[in-house]
Image (tube, rainbow, N blue to C red; front, top):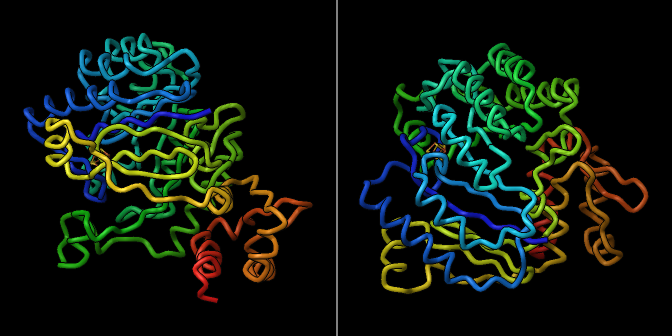
Amino acid sequence: MPGVYISYPFCSQKCTYCNFASGVFTRNQQERYDVALVREIEAHVWQWQPETLYLGGGTPSLMEFGPLESTLSPIPSGALVEATMECAPGTVTAERATFWRSLGINRMSLGVQSFVPEELRRTGRRHTAQIVESDIQVLTGAGIRNINIDLIAGLPGQTLASWRESLSWVERLSPPHVSIYIFELDEDSNLGREATLGGIRYGAGLLPSDDAVAEMYELAVVELAGLGIHRYEISNFAKPGYQSRHNLKYWTGEPYAGFGLDAHSFNGGTRRGNVDDLNLYLDRMEAEQSPAGEASTVDAEEERFFVGLRLARGIQPTEGEWRRFRDPIEQSIRDGLLEREGGWLRLTPRGFLVSNEVFQNFIEVRAGLV
Ligand code: SF4
C-alpha cells in the first residue's frame, strides 16, 4: 500500500550539519508556502488510498493549527494506519500534542541527535535531555506512544563515553523506535564549510575517527538489542511491531507521493522530485506551474535489489540477479560482508558497517565498470 510524504522546510535555526532544503525563512515565505502546499495536494489525483503519511522537513511540529489541518484534510484518510510527524524537541506542548492526535497523527519522530549538552550546542540545537524527557511524557499523555528518537554517531567532540551517555538516556526513556545515523560531513553545511576553511565554532576539527564512529555504531546495536530494540535496517531499530511502515516503503519499492519543497514521488516505475529552492517552488505554485523536476525512470527490479539489501532480513534475489551479480556477491561473501541463507542474501554485522563499500561493488557491475 502506498504512502504520502509532505515536506515542511521551516526551522527555528539552521543546524550546523544540515544540508537539507530547510532553514529559517521569512514569515511571508511561510504563509505563501502554507497556501502553495495545500494547492499542490488538492490538485493531486489520487489513484490509491494511502496507508502511511509522513510529515518531514524541516520542522513540521512548528506548523500552525490552521495550515496543518488544511494540509492534511485533502488527503484520503480511510486506509491510513500510520501518520508520522517529525518534531524538534522543545516544540511539544499539551495543546499541540492533543491537536496532532485529533488529526490522526499517531507517531512522532524526535530529532534528538544527542543527549550531551556540549554536542547539542555544536549542532545548533537548543534542547536538553530533560526537554526530550518532558516532550515524551506530554506526547504519551496525549495518546501518541509510537515515538522515534533520532541519534547521530560521529558528532564533533563525541567520544565513546559521551555516546554511552546518550544511549543511557535511550534506556531511561525506552522509546519503541530509534534511528542511528552515521555523521557525514557535507560540504554545503556550515560544519562542512568550517572544515574546508578552518575555524573552531562548530567543532569541525573535533570529528571522531572512522574507527571510533564504527565502535559507537556497534555499541548501539548491542545496547539497543539488550533493550529489545532490534536493527531492521542499517539506521533503524525497533521493538517488535514498531518498525516504521512508511520508511519500509522506501526499502521495499512501494509507491509514494511527495508534496512540498524537495519532496520526491515514486509510482513504481518513475521517480520525480520537486524543486529544492523555496522561492522557485513558491513562484511555480503561484504561477500554477508544476513544482516537479524531470522524472527519471527506475528499474524496479534493480531498485528492489539495492534498497532491499539495507534491510536486516535482506532480499531474495531472482535467478537473473544471482547470475548478474555473481562476482560481487561471491567477493562480498568471501570478505565476510554478505551472507547467504537459502534464497536470502543479507549484510553481515560487519557488512552493515561498510555497506557503502558493498553497494559500490554492485553499482560498478550495474554500470558495466567491471
Ligand atoms: S537538521 Fe532538521 S531542524 Fe536542523 S536545520 Fe536541518 S531540517 Fe531543520
